[in-house]
Image 1 (tube, rainbow, N blue to C red):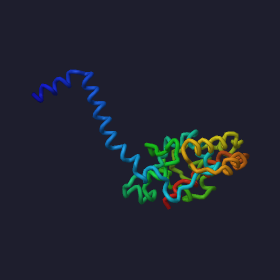
Image 2: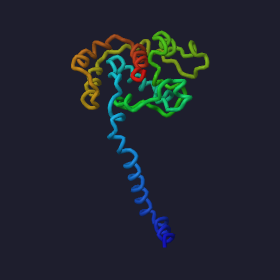
Image 3: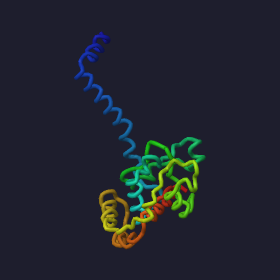
Image 4: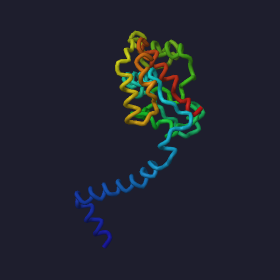
Length: 203
């Protein structure tokens, strides 16, 4: 009797598809829904602070140049990773990240805790000519970042969107000063500021 029911499901593509969708939906409901109600996955960690206007511009440059394609920002809870990179990543570090930049590939090292590990000058040289500081690096150089100057035209809008849509606690003063905080700075300064901001919440 049970084998004949099994055959009915296997031979009926429509029924099989419907039952598959139901099974996946139930699995997602059981596995994912509880996470939405756990404080540690929806609340920021204690030391988390919003990106400054310059760091926010640097983050956008990081995305534009495809840095997240080769670098992850997600330290897994394995000894080999925590010994190399530091404390494993937790959900509360990323509640204000839109989009998330966890990544899934590591052509280069993980950058979740890179803030403060190297000097600004090291980053500047590394971004312009990576092999000047890491001879075996296969990272391309980004010399134009040192020449491109930010005008801050959209920075105020970015901070406003992050506050109004994603709940990032920017003050009116931070938003009002956003343009002047980045105007005249180079893209490399913004990217370095962003990199130096990473990982401090868990230190």
